[in-house]
Length: 502
Image 1 (tube, helix red, strand yellow):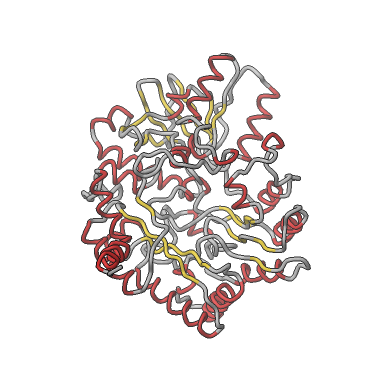
Image 2: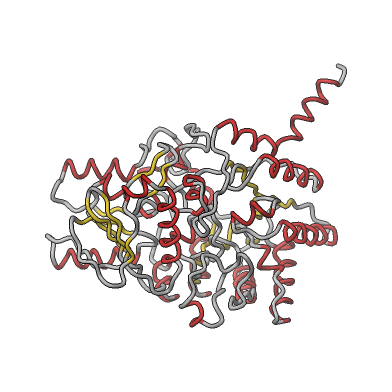
């Protein structure tokens, strides 16, 4: 899930040198806010033709949102783009229904399709509608914006959501509740369509960096119940996991094997997280009443089934196919799921077996995990587990590597300048990663993006669930000062090299 502006600019608001989604990685082919730009052009050319917006950019901006690049609170993208309808989230169901409605009546834009949003002058309010503070109220009071986010997030994480309304000076934005959870058969049908798995023919002989990364990968499930404060995956794909059947996955593996440059290696068997396949609530009735944004924070839900056996079964089935030399796991692994002590001894045993098989057979040399920080106060704002769990997982990783005579690397991802993080916290992080002998190269400076809790905290200064003030590093100097702690070892090396005689 890549926001169009994150794809174009760095956290320092500098133009990126490469656009991973354009031919040859050219950074000058996509405008800022493409949904707004392209929709306005279409409306200028064909005023009567309905325009339907969708995807990450539109979905995350369907209501009042903070824009980091313009440093202001913006209205719904429906107001700025003049799109007739907006499809949010994964759009297979709504777009089919929209097409069917237009075939029946080409003149009217449908207003009652689930998982869509639209702008209207006047609307009759129903008894169970959620009325957010208006855009203009949020401009005057940041706490109202923070409170709005909590209501939006909680509603996004329920089985049976209701309609959301927000007034603006342009009218009222209406967000219809989403479709019921996608069934496995429906997800299989979507993935089983006869895709070429190739870039459009017009890009022949052009390199598309993002395609190179995913052309030999298999997506085995949708959704994420991690609920990380800085991530949009659960907001876009949902908290509840929908998994593909083994038959559908194996069918796609065989299709990948037919690609002309396939050499026998799958780059990923995963999803938003590597190891959530087939995981769901033991008692669905409890899930239907739940509004928790995360099934894993502040602790793993007692109702969550954390059994890794279905996932191991997929690995074994894929690896048994003649012509598959090795399948790697490129998605991020949630080690807190693996280290969780279940009351079921079989599930605990299977988690241990999964760790062994993952590390021995499915690592291409580097295993990615995301502790994100070391300080408990920062991790609490992030909705991430204690760093102690990462250290426990590292010990297991190192032990298995020694026993198997492997030379693999564990690659931890960290974020600087996240809301709640101060320089003292980064100094603590730097001390710990030096103790663990990590030399970090791939690190991330927090970038506020629409519809994440971290962004709402960063902009408003308040935690949406407590309305207590939270510190954020905001100036470029403050952010740089935090980021430099990642690379303290480089400064020391430079100082040592200056002292060495030639």
